[in-house]
Length: 177
Image 1 (spheres, one colour):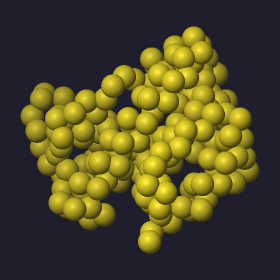
Image 2 (image 1 turned 45 degrees about the vertical axis):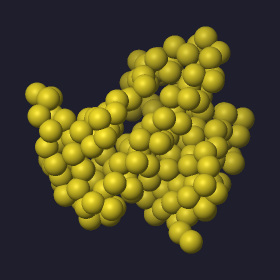
Image 3 (image 1 turned 30 degrees about the vertical axis):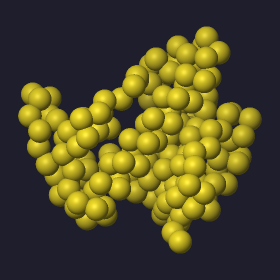
Image 4 (image 1 turned 60 degrees about the vertical axis):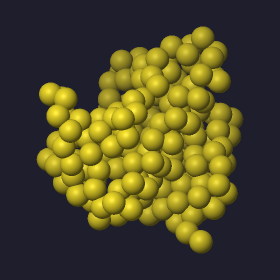
């Protein structure tokens, strides 16, 4: 059985706090979440378990995320010399950007395909971190992993996804996952 690992993480600091987007690795992970199809469950990793998270990502047959190649992996590069981009990856945001010629947010896909929205946003997760509200971050991050999994599985099954554009129109895009 193929082990697909769906993945997302949240950070401790914003780009502004670390001196810009060129210093993503300095943002530090507040927590990361995976869903493993082999395990059939979610795991939440605090910063003290970042090595376990990296190990799980390395061992996956495929890692699926949303902007994880340029953002989440860059955050993890502050903890390890391992280049996770060399493993089998499917970055849904990158794949869809290449197909459409512009970026889509996970919320646009979730709303267009399922009528669901995200529960919060990354800036709120930064505030929760400063307040020590790790349970809220975990819930938010788990939900994003669930949406990523749902979008990927729908695309695999139906060979297309739907999204809302900035004008509220629902459009579709073909995928070959």
